[in-house]
Amino acid sequence: MSIWEYANPKKFLATSEKVMPALWVLSIALCVGGLIWGFFLTPDDYRQGSTVKIIFIHVPAALMAINAWFMMLVASLIWVIRRHHVSALAAKAAAPVGVVMTLIALITGAIWGQPMWGTWWAWDPRLTSFLVLFLFYLGYIALWEAIEDPDTAADLTSILCLVGSVFAVLSRYAVLFWNQGLHQGASVMRAGAVAGDTEERVSNVFATPLFVCMGGFALLFLVLVLYRTGTEIRARRIKALLARERLEAEA
Amino acid sequence: MVDLGKYADTVLSAYAVSLLMLVALVVLSIRRGRKVRAEMEMIEERGRKHG
Image (cartoon, rainbow over the protein chains, first blue to last red):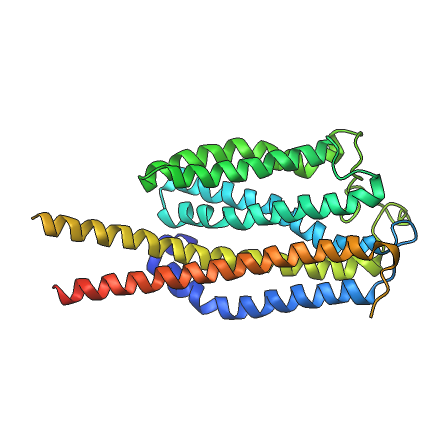
């Protein structure tokens, strides 16, 4: 069996409809379980007080905001190289999910930043690159809507996705590139952390429910993209059927 | 009930806004999915009737 079999819309729809019920249940269970665990069963942080509970939404949303763009990049490259319509439609389907994740990360970051940093917003490298990523998402969605021909739209949005990937990378690694700004450095999965060096890492009390939430958000993203890709495949079929009807009416 | 102290408004507003957006995303995705599926089935049925 090859992964390219799923480039066939019928095969994609049949398989995704089989796995989606389990994915819905698992993603909601992990999200709800992780958030209840984080909200009700974790202590306050000694410096940040109860605001630390925002981490259980902010970090998973930010992670998915960046990963959604990378998923769109891979799907777009598959479209550009192999011309599989399902991959172009999967990229299109992922964008609204990614934009919501980016918006959640930006809003919860601002709400969290106000009491901790004394400001809702700062032109900090990570915050700024995230804002630019959000604008790229909006531009990507607008470009899909603006172009009538789906293949041309897929071509142009793929190029935009490639360009926007620079900001997805910057969003992920801005805190490592520049040692300035208000946003803290990587602390959940810090590269180069060694045994005994725990001062700047998230404590296990918070890390375990956080990983549950991250898993839940990742699965929620996956199931939403599968569902929305199915919708895009059907919407494309509607266009084709209506075009055929018009041709038959004219003949 | 968990005691959020002086940051209760901050934490609750962050959760409320986020959950609202996530629920809206799921509901709107499902609503559009059902609408498109129904429309496609209607057009396919029309096509079958007209041969």
